[in-house]
Image: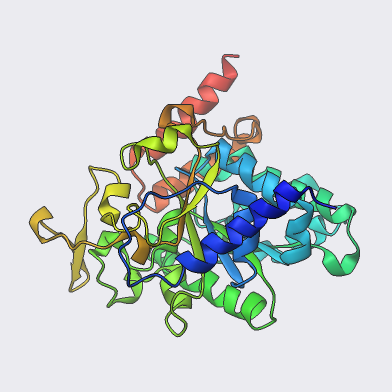
Length: 365
């Protein structure tokens, strides 16, 4: 039996979510209030099949990873949710992930294809936190009956690198990075009446794409959320980890982490641009070419029209980031392949330099 205070906290979360979500037409100038984030997310699952949780303040955010692990390890999570969908895994190896999280013996050299063979060939793909989630789900499933096992859905398009010999070959896969996971969610989650926590970089969860100045005319401007909500507006509950100190002063006293529903609050009525980097650029796409949009032509959009809630992890200087697994450097062939793919698709030299510098630093220890 839960303590009465726990029941009261859960009831408060439910009331906040119930009254905040329908209030889109109202601009109630009140501060956002912190909620215990695990309870708030589980409450959101009572009314949404999909809860979209932004990966963190950046790829590799260790505080965000720790929170995700705490969330999926909560006994209430496995009672309410069927699937965890991730950006870091190649759908080509879905059968490998299914076998692994179900408890089968999967050799390490086979398992690592799931995160090393995605469309993203940078050093980010080797961050150890992505492997940690797969291993955590395997451990959770070991204590559950088969019909309650969590499934990890790999959302990255099933790129076949052995057939990618030009940048044009690569671009055909890259163009699917939002449409493929949207279709996967429709097929494996929504059509089957399941519920899923979707973990992706926050830019994939925009309702309107800030980079295109909120123009959603072309396929390249679509996001996972815009595609899924095309026929069912506001059907996903979206949560973005953001820095809030400059937007609401009292957040420094909030428990860390905290979730806050933004609809009907001062945060919700703030221009979404305030949540974005100051040096950000926006572009228009004309005849297949990207043209910068002058700042005086930037459109405004209320944050509550872009997302449902935010997670506050703490001050920026308290956030730490994962390191690549050591396998990146101890396997010369893996390093060679990483560098070759970075060069093939024309990424900036800094990406290759990051691989080389990291491996050099490991070798000096």
